[in-house]
Image (cartoon, rainbow, N blue to C red; front, side, top):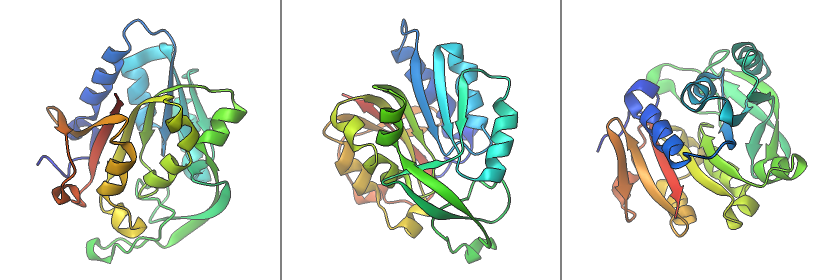
Length: 232
């Protein structure tokens, strides 16, 4: 099934997915991209490498310590704008749990990872907004590509983007699905039935995109996998 490589950009097919998305926008001079769960900026930098300055990239990272590293890493790239808050389904203050500073496992869900000898014993208070609110406040009417990697909170981000989704204002959505969804109690079927009427769904694999034409329980596989939704 090519499931379980989603954590590694070079093995997961994410670079090929970026190339595919970029190709669909040949001739478009100004792309609006959201990198939600930017961590220290590796994915935003990868986007900049392939798409360049025709993309305005808003990078969202709620952890203050991780955000400082993000700012440092993208400081010379004028088209990447870092924001020190997260996105969800409502404006709120929440607790972010992690095992170590800058960890890609940081989540608003206190995950039980004893089985792999990881203790999510560090925490900090963070600010959460919604995608719709951010777009309203910044007069953003269209998003060409929305990337979500928020350790189980992806569905909540989409719920907070209800207005943009209803108005067909998002072209591509990449979201991660894996073990963190056990802790957030969300399932692939939640994403499938939310998106299927207006998007074609694909699993991102190393050698391309695997189309998902109908739901199956076999997609409830909790090894990290990335999916792409393309507006019909």
